[in-house]
Length: 308
Image 1: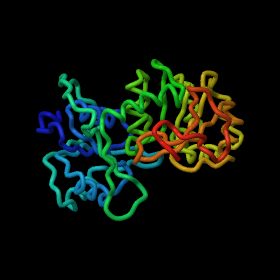
Image 2 (image 1 turned 30 degrees about the horizontal axis):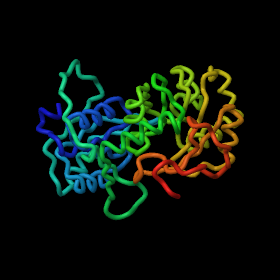
Image 3 (image 1 turned 135 degrees about the vertical axis):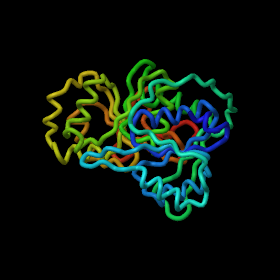
């Protein structure tokens, strides 16, 4: 579909979608044809989207009719329309997913790219002024992600790896999309929140139902679960026997939350540290190489390539 709209190697494509499978399909489609994807977090308003359109100068934007939140439905197209009106750069095409699958597609051959060719642009969060786009290349990025799956996270090919994040953030790029697929793992797309989507036992249900060994999420998720179910009574309703590690990143993991999770889940709780600019872990506890003693408040040791 992108090829039919004139998108070729080196063109930028903005992806503005919630956590649905088509968001990952769009990222991989761009990678396959040598285009550079720039995912904009679905929670951003029209102005934030417009600034990213002006900075990345994309040929196309892929959006969706709506996003589903615990207590509301968010219409995306008014936001897209507002952004397109505000932006100085004018797009060639806007593709909209009506939340129904196409009946069938056709195979498009992979476009060869150099290790140093760009794979994506991702804009940093929490800054003011002109958005700052991080351009990530293909080769070194993939080597680092592949290494981390077994050595940092202790995950084997064929296992199921769940990262409860969003492809609008770097965690979703690296560990919902590229790293698990490079490593031969099943990855999971989860549209929802740890509370307010079904009930506070949602995480336990997903882990039990899909046979996860590992969960990687933000400390905020566990703070929310702890607040609503401080005794973790809902855990008793689910089979967690195969679950072996909880990883936290994205913000400070306070010791009390880590201790609570350790006690209730009876597994190691690993805090690790990185950001959009690095694309992978800067400091962590390499479970696959033999877990080091946990020091609360510390992400443990520097990862290969970093001197901290």
